Structure formats: structure tokens, C-alpha cells
Length: 213
Image (cartoon, rainbow, N blue to C red):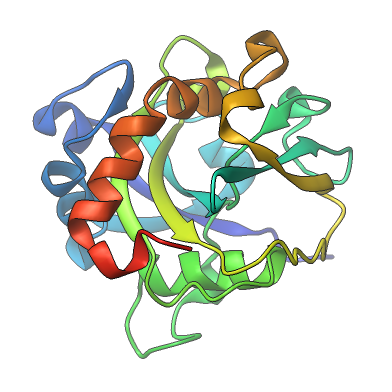
């Protein structure tokens, strides 16, 4: 029998103590250190975590920007989250598995696992990504049990490697064109595109030398 994937979670009541919001919050400094602290995280069987509303699964959600373009792709049938199939996304990332612990360091870490997820899906340097926001969408069943951490990564060129079936038709599209059909995007991507100028400005403030691809 295959061993079930165990994913990184935090208790929802911890998130509630920090302050529940709907949509996107730029106060990542308020949330990220707490929800990724070793004392506050735990791994649960994914099938249980998807149904247990007492927990939030932490999801890195990276926006890949190259010049004046952003990476966009369509959710494919290879992804486990069937509720997102067929929708456009501008976020690269996914659940953090227990097997990720110690992959890049000896610690039990969100950050190292996040880099692994990006290396697996997109062929770019992710050593200096910037965490810029947090996403929460309690309006849907899938959103209620997930918490997104938005990262911005600048790509030097448009060479993208599609390394698994969950990403289909990845391409860089002009920022001005990215939201011409907003209903075709998953909710997290809509939140990001609606706040993209603020997200990019925050990334530039964190690491000015990375603001130019």
C-alpha cells in the first residue's frame, strides 16, 4: 500500500489570532514568521487536511516575472486539486510534503521546501525570492483549508521547463494582457493580479537589485 502524502499545516486558530482577512494581505511580515515557526507547524495526511477545517495547509504561491511579462499557465488534469482544473493561474507552487524536511537543510522548513517546489516546476534561479503577501479565501471549501504565501521571483529569460503534468501551456504574457479574462482565473490569481502593482513595488523595496529582470 502506498504511503499517503503528509502536508505542512498550521492550526486555524493561530491564523485567527493573527487576524483573519479575506483576499490578499500585504502584511506578510505579520503572518509568515509565525505560521512557519517550527513550534507552530505540523504534518497531516493530505486526505485528512483537505477536510479538517481546524487547519490551514501552507501553500507557496510564486509569481514569475520576466521584464514586463508574467508567467501564466492552465491547470491540467495531472494536478490533484480537481476543483482548479482548466483555470488559468499565475502562481507556481504547491503543498509542502513531509519528505521535503531536511532536503536543503537540517531544519523542518517551509522556505527550503518552497524552493524545491519551484525548482521542480520552473527552470529558474529561485535563491533570492521575495515573500510579499498572504492569501486567504474562506469563501470556498478549498480556500478555507489553505493559506497562500505569495512570493515574487524574477526570471532572467523566458526559458520555462514544464516538468510535471499539473502545469500546462506555461507562457509569459504581457502584464497588461494577463487579466483580460478574469473569470478564467482561479481566485488566488485574481487576488494577485488585482494587487500586482503593490506586490511588485514591495518586492522592489525588499531587494532593489532584483527588480530588473
